[in-house]
Length: 285
Image (tube, rainbow, N blue to C red; front, side, top):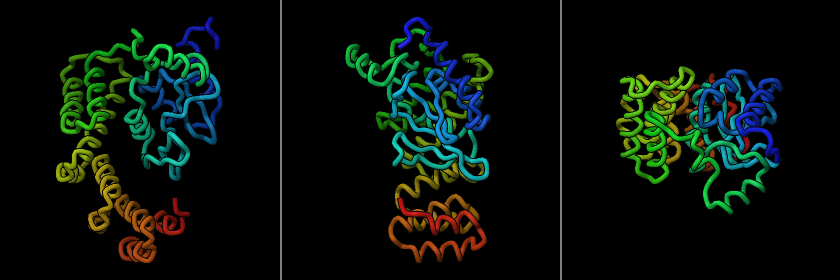
């Protein structure tokens, strides 16, 4: 561990190394760096993936989802482990928001050292690194956003819906003037958080109403229908032209071993959709 070098300098050097490396798409690096909760973590790369560690030296922590590139300029959010999948993301900002929504409780500025040293430090102090870092004290709308995330962690989804909505109100009212690069990321994260809270609260009718004009609401609704095993709901949405619903439907049916039904759904709804046909032959997870 380099105790002589300031924490901020170590983390910033890590971000510069990722930029210089060139294996991660520039738009993803920019989107992740613009999010203050990720910018204070230590980034590292592998196979074009962008990972986030709560410590600055190898071995890294593996308790935060990572982002990998997918076809057509899209992304997939996976992890924390290699066997876990969070979901697809159309844009880098959407992928970043999905990671932020799943940060460990108390996640703050990266610890200078490796994961073993971090674990020892946390055991000795009894708190997660960053919890009492004065540089990370939050003001509105960031404090409201943090409260919304705590409500999500505690399963208080109705309260989280209202808190995420309050973030947008605070941004519009100018209750706090964050730096320009944080403004869009904060608003976007709050919007995605509200969609997630609506889904987890079971308020799918509200989500469906928003999904008529809101792409993020549509995708979150489709994912919830998939998680709940509602094949009929996904089929109905796919029949109206929602291809994300079709992809989730195919995955759900194949998970159930209903390969014939999955093939028939693609044949009936979108026989020329290349990605849907690929899903029919993808190895089962």
